[in-house]
Length: 78
Image (cartoon, rainbow, N blue to C red):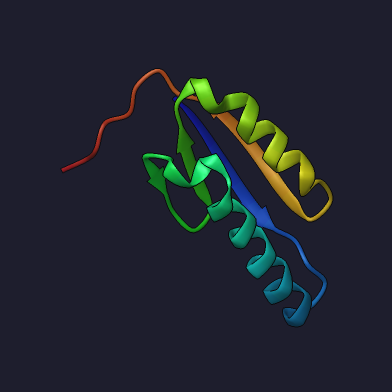
């Protein structure tokens, strides 16, 4: 499993809102929309979708900051 932690970068609120709308629109249109776990700034995907995710995030280079984390296992805390 791979975790992508991302943060949208914009100069002001108007640009941020525009970037956020465009980013999430394209994310929901991609094959990553079926990822097992999505939050506001974290996307967990299976290893088989790694190339797709890398290509998707490369489109947004300069507009977002992305960190890619490989996870062997994840456990939910009680």
